[in-house]
Length: 368
Image (cartoon, rainbow, N blue to C red; front, side, top):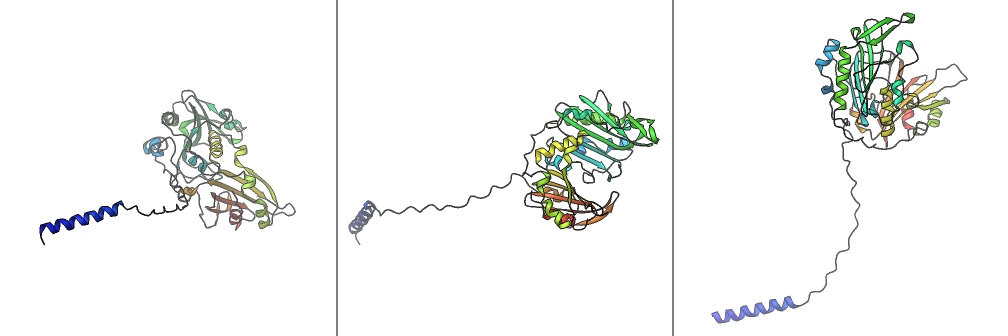
């Protein structure tokens, strides 16, 4: 094939291609947009992780083993889960408060060798509670101590050979509670009271006073984050559980329902816990069931509910997860059960008459 023929064919091909490009294409319909459900937003936190305090302080950095040994003669185990009692620990942790505990127990009827530190904002706490530490007995008279924080009140009690003092310290916008329980009696001055009792007052310059002052300075000087937002909302104690259904299941009339927050401002620690509960919408409730027509023993229910409290399952704070546990302790027999509902983490303790099966009955009637 000659070069001339090849050139002619190439021209024809190019002309065809250009003609095809010039031909308007048929319009193509745009695809109709299809609606798809928006993905659920992922939580910005791990719901199973124990909330950190908003002061950024570790308990072990607040008090070291050497600090504790200098006071007690030996270190105490850091063990925040061994507290029996109504201390609002769950609400304080959820609120970002400093909440530290070292040592043993105590049980309901005893005070064991231990140290407790709680610190949080005064917001929501009545400042007059600092003056309400006296429990109506001369053996429990608070003592004001200068030079510790902006203001410090100390309440001591105990017996010969040991002292137990709780320091309630105001610094700037904070309240700080530092308790040294069953420390050596060299920390206090003791005099005999009525009925073989011992009246204790803090000894000036004692090791516990030095530690309390240092702890207060350290916590007050730490930068802190705002309060954590509550992870849900719960109703008041009279509505958080269908108590009528519980009474029917137990076969006992309901005598009363209430909240621990109603009359719980005798100490700074309690006042801080009640304020934290209000901010975090946690509930600590009690109920009594009793039939006046016989001589049976009343049944008492104690319930704690924390919205968004998945973290409690692995925290070690609550026993008897998902399986009811009945056992004895110094305050008497008790049955316990902890678990997660659709709206909250819930733990139930039942004392008195009808114990076995009681926690599961209350848990089933929980309605948030």
